[in-house]
Image (cartoon, rainbow, N blue to C red):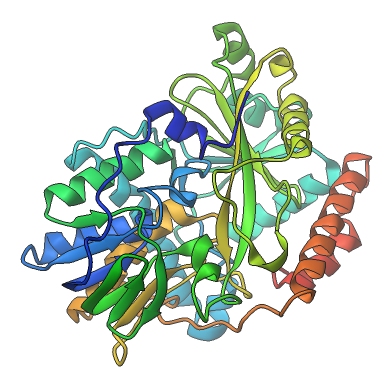
Length: 456
């Protein structure tokens, strides 16, 4: 079993040869920090709109090194933090418009991949979330009723037999499914986007760490980039930048990938349409069937490191492998004999109110996008298009969405941040264990944790 080495996705395709480092002081029209999805999509749409722009991306390691190359490959329509918060601030119509845009963004990613010849193993089979305890069943039914009251959700509640005919998860009570989701191979998408923007004339400089983002300037370990606009596209690594240590909490998420599974196993699982798979646990899981017939399944292992420390190459604790393997085997007993080929971890950015944000400060020329809390495969595309319109001064439908220029307060200082994170995830774990033992209603421990975290 490979532990770390960035991710199974990069292990599969191979990390490309290093690109040049920043050659010293340069100028550009737009300078982007981070060669993940946010930075790459922003560069793509800028060059498509204005080919004459000099667009430069500065990356501390290599393209897709962070969450963009390590995630679970869920291209789905979820709004980070949910729609209700936007009803309070902008009204129901604005929240529903946001949902419609997220649905369309799933298809936009697929469209661009096809148009640019990016083979990222994309298969649109929808999102399937299962309840396998009585308490989860009560939540899934309440969730379905609430979702079906909104426009553009297209959600179906599936009773046990129908759900198991779609994906045969052991002990299924009920499930929900919607069509606005697809499986992707994350590293292939990142690599394909990078090659695409380079063909358009974007310059990508790797192994160059940005020390500080200033108005219209990036200070790096290899020189200074002066630009009319600078874009912060650093997601889970934002805490490493000067002055931004408490802006977004770098949350760890871990995955395991099995060996390719035999046809007999897949016949039993009946998981054939490219659905991405999740559940209604409090410490939730996420999974996909890969194009080469593995199961990649993820969840929270060690959720947060003291002082907002971020990992390097994805080394993962053995206890996390055990936890994720137990979930896999509980869902699909037929996988018990399958080897785990790879385990890895990465960091994602979590704002204090769990709401992603995109924006531009016209006074400083600093734009940003991030805080996706796990929805970034899709939301980064919308961020890239939005940043492009903001920089070019386009007053478009997407620049009026309620997440644009959304501001959040900072996280608490240490040690409060670490104590709270550890305690809250322990509480969610206790709630899940109580529900697995037969509790018929949602644990009050989880309700309290939801209120404290801002998720409830």
